[in-house]
Length: 408
Image (cartoon, rainbow, N blue to C red; front, side):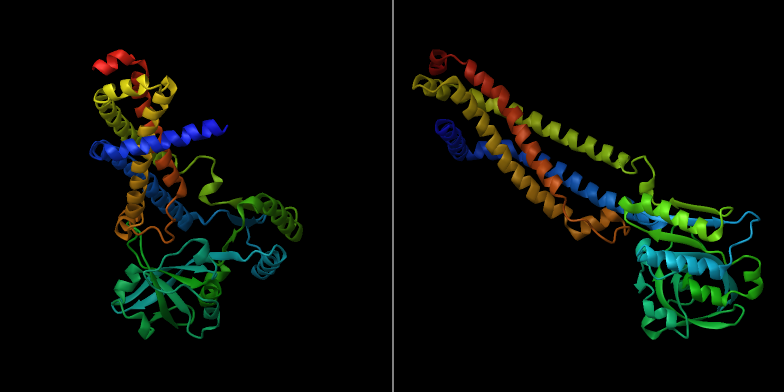
């Protein structure tokens, strides 16, 4: 055992000494490997940023994993009494200790602009909704728990709305007039971006505020039926779905249609990141192949210059296995060093704010740390390339006859 260990250590030391002697040759031959490892590690690292962008985009529309959507319907199509539904909703959240849940109410409010009154899409939500859907603001802040007690309700407006009121400084607490059943002055506390297809102003209000502002005649026509959303741990989603459905059915009657389903992106069986994984894998494989081919060519050329050296070592008693392992280890040690350099370069590239901003295109709020698996993959690829590139020269070195090598 000690002899095996000493042979391995000796091979490493010998390989390192050879690399030191042939520094120029090694540096030139390993530039391609370092660049290849840097490229493959960078691609994987930036792929993680791009994947996070897709995840956050899906979470903004469908909620984080796992977001449940509750629907309750009656046999005659009339909505459930709002007070009964609210009491049951509140007690359910308390019973199962669900901290992130929101009612979502879509309505319309008439807003007084400088160029006249216009209907504006109003979305009523509860305070946790911003976290559940990763709502991103370009200015201001999301609703706070204290906003429910405001005498002048807080509203968050989209960029179109904000442009229409002249882009006032939010620090001055700008107001807007809502011409509902009772005209109300609201304070603009935040601005959120719009998608490319949005052309009309819109705003968020707290659900209770929107209900209070809705005219009685609109409420009587069934215009105040919110959607109910819950954000729960994915591993508990199935059990909670069964339990909450049972509780609502028991409280509202067996004839009531109670449906609780997941609406987040992870609820679907298909992998939403399959395309980006294939793209990253294809680019990484191509880069690695090019680096390996270049290293093999250089290794074969340089081996011809060392034929006499190998013959001398064999004549002094070096076994075929020792020569094979030494030639192989020279390649592996060199490529591992190149791999470390390439990984360091990839880390600097991926963590650069300018590069991250270009990849994310403003769609990422929580940038992932540099993936450890990307660094490990880069080092593994460097080691694999070194082994493959050293295998053929090592086989050639072993097959060389001692007398012929000395005369070479």
